[in-house]
Amino acid sequence: MAAPYARPNQAPSPGPKPRILRVGVLLGGKIVEERLIRERAPVTIGQSMRNTFSIPVEGLPLEFTLFALDEHRYSLRFLPRMDGRLSDSGGQVHTLDALKSHGAQSHGSYFEVPLTESARGKLSLGDLTILFQFVTEPPRQPKPMLPASVRGTFADRFDPRLSVIMGSSIIIHFAIVIVALFADVEVDNGIAERAYNLTFKQDTYAVDLTPQKAADQGPGSAAEKKPDKAPDQRKAPERGDSGRSKADQVALQEQEASKFADLLTGEGLNGTSEGDMSKRRPGADLGAQINEVREGGQTVKVGGGAGRTSRGDGDIRVGTGHGPNINGPGGTESAGGGKTQEKAPTGRISVADKQTFDESTLTPDIVLAKIQSAYMAGLKRCYKEFLKKDASARGKVTLNLTVNETGRTTKGAAHGFAGEVDECISGLMSGWRFPIPKDKDGEATEASFAITLQLVPD
Image 1: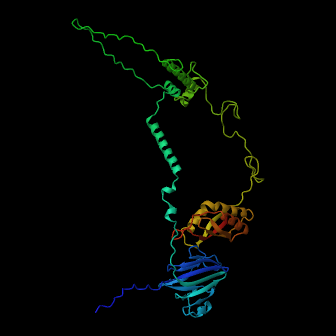
Image 2: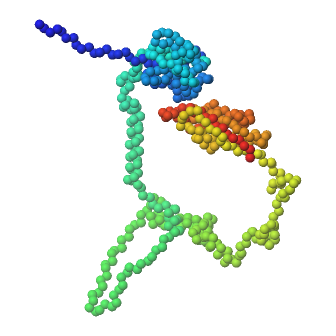
Image 3: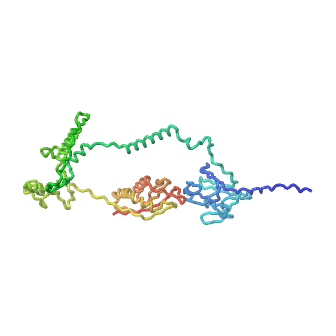
């Protein structure tokens, strides 16, 4: 008997897909953001840019964990001033007030209640409304891409005409450089170089290389044979383009170079010229000039000679000048005769306290260093203007500022001192710049600070 037909093994059916959290944020009844939390991670809300949902709502802290994760299960945390309702797995709806009294665990500043994967709810805080529910994770959409026929290749990105022009230009330029390197044209020395050679001559030494004649040759010595004299072959001088021979041209150039040298150094026919620079030559130093004066029988005096000072003998003496008087109790006069203006009081500014509200690379010390190096002069100017009205004014002023992702100061305000000084400092803070604050992931973020300064008059 044949064996019964064996059915092939069927692949086990995959289990239910895990459900993920879906959160929507509404402001004033209009939805502003909706997100699927595909990764199991805590969800935070607040005014800081580091939160999962950054919401600028009054009464909301800088950072608050709305959905906490404990052993891969979510739990809802809500503030005491929040209102809303929560539906559990059985379909029962509970208000947050009911959960506060029964079902939710109190942690002082917030309440916590565990959630199931079928829970959903609604939370409200002023104009802020948060809706959440657990849904089956939808498939991820692939990244849209153009077909290969539309994208083309890397070579298609270059224009053929432009490529030919650039290639020809590069070849021509390289050819010009090579020709310039290997075909350098030699030129004759110019007039300036000839004038230099005529003015500054190097020392030359004559060495006699003629061999000495023998003392006396005996009668048996052979007579010295004189070499035959070569026939005199004179070569016709070469003529230039101007009709002169090359020798005449060289002589003319040397004559012009000599005139040019005489013009610079004052060594012409009579020893002087209009452009006499002989006193500028090396060796015409102060010692040579003093010797010339001494040889001429003249004397040198300090003060410009007789009759040029307040005394007739030309000698300089202490105490011969007359200056403006300085009055006593009647008032102080300056050297020009006018009364000096009373000096305005000045003040000193020191740091009393510093505080930050966000964790970033921009620390309070960096902010203080920038203020003291670049912006302290403006703060002192605001305080000095107020001291003109009240010379004994002292106190503290608090600077509240927020540095955004570009390093600009936003929400800058000063308070705690006189209104005039606070407004002056607040106006200056709008133009302050600081290094860009970055979070622990290296991304640009916002950072808020509170700097308290002590203002004391001198």
